[in-house]
Length: 196
Image 1 (tube, rainbow, N blue to C red):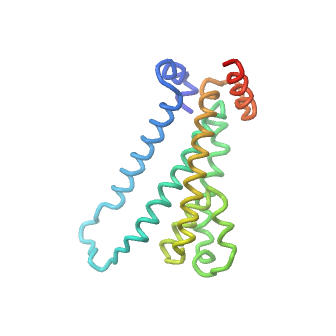
Image 2 (cartoon, rainbow, N blue to C red):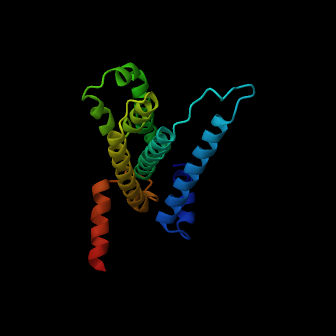
Image 3 (cartoon, rainbow, N blue to C red):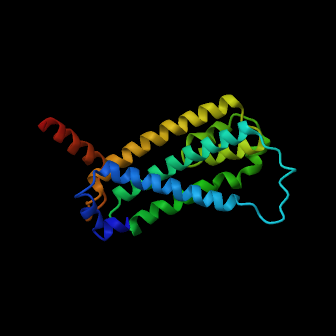
């Protein structure tokens, strides 16, 4: 958003393809997130890790859920940045989206205690699914079948959201005056395809 508001994006896009630019930014965000995770996980002096049991299956599922959730969240943020003309406008959507991520923590007793069918509802929304699934994975209440389905759903959702975000960025990165019309970007694309 800052690059868009400062008109830096115009200069960058004269030398780069929008897909390459967004892919680079997403990879950079993944790397920043990985560094932050490693710093948080750095051993604390005097902490005895010998009593902790390591379960490879749970760790692998948790890692995949984290990566899938990060992909979904990053894709949504890129799409918001492409559609909105200013950071102030994007903030009105970004704030509630950040709040949604923490909703499962308020319902943690419900997520941990009741094995009823309501749990599927938490996994439907992309903002709630990864956190709810990671909590259930940590508590040991996420079955292998459920984890496979949720990981696959989040991977597909994240991929589709990133594709949409790149498409929106292609048309919205230099759109400054008003919000970008999503339907308008598809009409522009179809018109360009018809001229070829």
